[in-house]
Amino acid sequence: MVNKFWGQTLRQWERQTGQQHEKIIQQRGNTRQRLPLAPGSSVLEQDQHTKTWNRTGTVVESKGNRQYLIRLQGSGRISLRTREHLRPCNAPTTFDRQGDNSQLMDEVVLLTPTPPATTTTALPWQKETTPPTMAG
Image 1 (cartoon, rainbow, N blue to C red):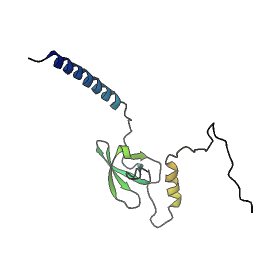
Image 2: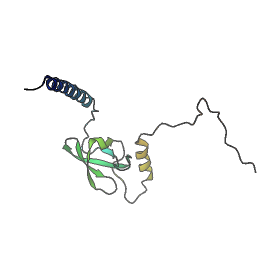
Image 3: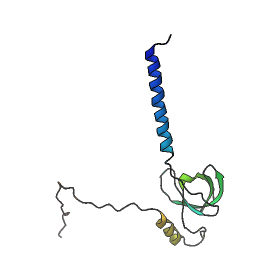
């Protein structure tokens, strides 16, 4: 025969796990919905080591399950990435291998989000001081 204490403990555990399960479902329902990428569209690819958006490419094929085959600019290498690591951009889709690409790369860099400028202001309890100048 099972002790009443264990029955109460089991019911309490079932209630807690049910509440945790509902909370997880609510959190997963708030995930960001990203639009699918069409083949031929230009994208920025995130470097997974440095977390920077510095690679550009063109969508070659959609593989399903939010996976895309991307042809990287410059090397022409094919890369498989999920939608999470891709951003659509309006960059040019072709690069001149012999010519100067600095202007094109400047356009790509301008499309990446820039962090807000930080200002250095003194905290309320600190005095603002100007750095000493060297008189010579």
